Image 1: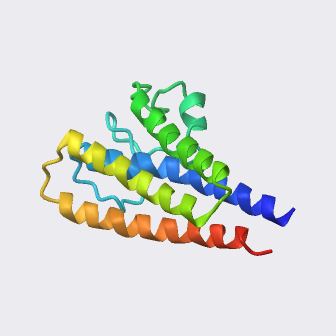
Image 2 (image 1 turned 45 degrees about the horizontal axis):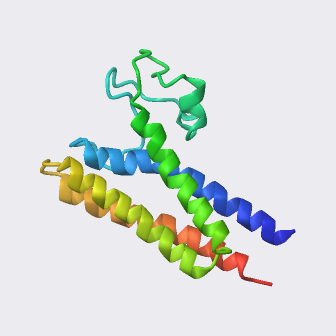
Length: 157
């Protein structure tokens, strides 16, 4: 039973990582000068801070019908698809490979490749880009260290 709780925590961490990916990857893509470590999310149109309950990955997008809760402008489906493109493959990979360390390493490689491909495709040109990329890598290191801890727990008999 303990193992299933750990697996559930791993799935939740991938779910949260999927939500974080919109902040991480899309801010690097969109040439924004706002730091990756900025403490809040905001609407790119009306610049209103998005409430915490409207930041729940996947569900908030569906609940708000793909619109900003403040100004009701459309939020691009790419944010929803990016969350899915992180959560589903990482969860599936981990499950199919029985939460092995190889699966963990593949998850890191997949996430960073997804970020790299999107950065190359959108060619950001801000002066803060290198600083934001470095902060992004630091944040990702912390996140994947927490996930590594969960993977380690799953191997304890």
